[in-house]
Length: 200
Image (cartoon, rainbow, N blue to C red; front, side, top):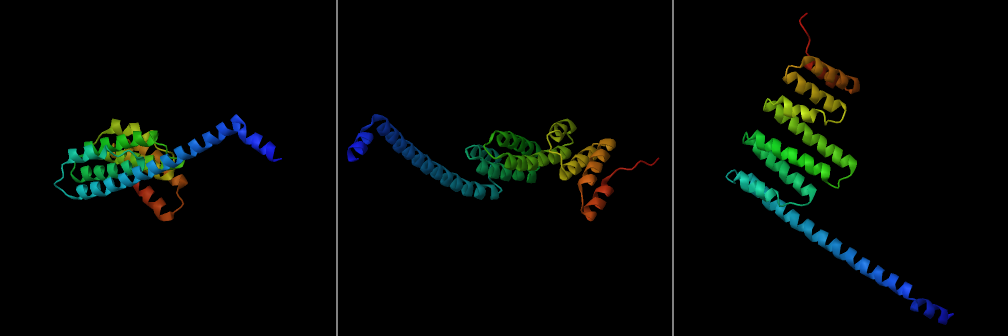
């Protein structure tokens, strides 16, 4: 019996498999350690970045350069959102829109789960559309209107967009879709107030 076990252990295929298992385990442990270090490093950079964003005198271009150094999408989402908000506060809407557009692309290319990506991109698209309303840019906003997922909240946003640009039939269509999906009576009344009625 012992001889059979020894012969089995001497089998070169078993030894190769065992060696591969040891190597793969070592690689896995190393990569886990590297990811932890990277995550810790990104977190420290985030704290430093946040402190700079709060200071009004910090140069916006310098912050943009620093924000590009983040490689983990979750951290990139936070810093770019902070930067976009700072751009909006400084009435630099073109920069804010560009930041959100890049975040949209990064989100689509990220390894986030489908549901998480959908939620994040929905928020980003809403910001882009609202900025385009402020910029009075119908064409650019329309590109993103077509990217919206179809749900009550987005139908209402779509209605707001079309209403602002005086496309009242499209606005009312969108508001009607929102009303079909809304159950809260207060919200229903609010959406009804947004609709545009002709004087005929």
